[in-house]
Amino acid sequence: MGVVENTYSFIFKNVLKAVNPIKKKIIKTECKVHKFINNQAVEILKNDKHKKAYNLVNKYINDINAGVVWADQDFKSSNHFYNPEINKGMYGCSNALLECRRYYSHAINMYKKGDIKKAMFYLGASCHLIQDLTVPQHVNINLLNEHRQYEQWVVRTYNEHENFKISNGGIYFNTIGEYVKLNVKTATDTYKRYHSIKDRNQRYYKITSIILTMAQKTTAGLFMKFYRDIKKIAPIKNNKKHRKYSLKIL
View 1 (cartoon, helix red, strand yellow):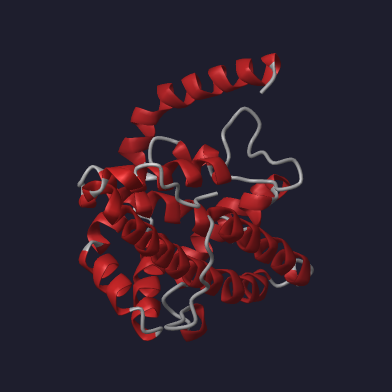
View 2 (cartoon, helix red, strand yellow; view 1 turned 135 degrees about the horizontal axis):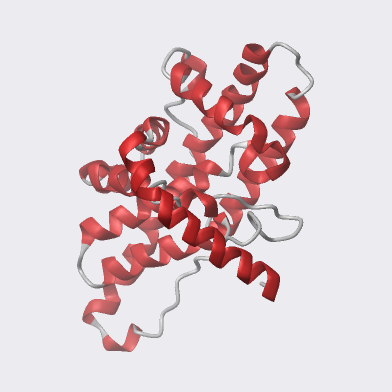
């Protein structure tokens, strides 16, 4: 960031710190939809026959969900945006790609230290970022004027429509970047396809039927990636010869 952007970032973050205690009293962050996505992703792993990965994330789903909620607290959500054309998020803030990679690295490091619960917590936080990037407003900041309105609609309706949930067909990649690229493209393409529908409920319904299921598929994939990565870590704990092993996170 340049001097002006750094100055803006400093002022912006201090303003957020000042109002945060008030926000905590007024708004209770529940992240119901993010938890729903995680729970469906666990079901996808089960039905896709990834039994060992399913057993792991199902055992620690409460820790994963705690992480997915934490990722939205204390105004960390200002870092949950990413424009691939300029490789940045909101002005003066970090971006969803950087934060997702950072949380995922924390998850891996916690696992290396033997703290599985904390590892799953940070995995949940990284999932939050992957999920956010299916939402058009998180990819195109110019759409933020409709962001809150859309979020509230999804919170009200996500459990009312069967085609908002899937139980199989996860998408399995090797890197965080691949998940980000797919979800950003899905968000952009879906918005372009349906944004001209005048009826708001119909427009939101069409968009959500695509992006919410994509969030579930890619979250299942991130769960599976984590399982595969920690299986590669196992020899490091017991064999010093493998300490230079590098996971493919990016």
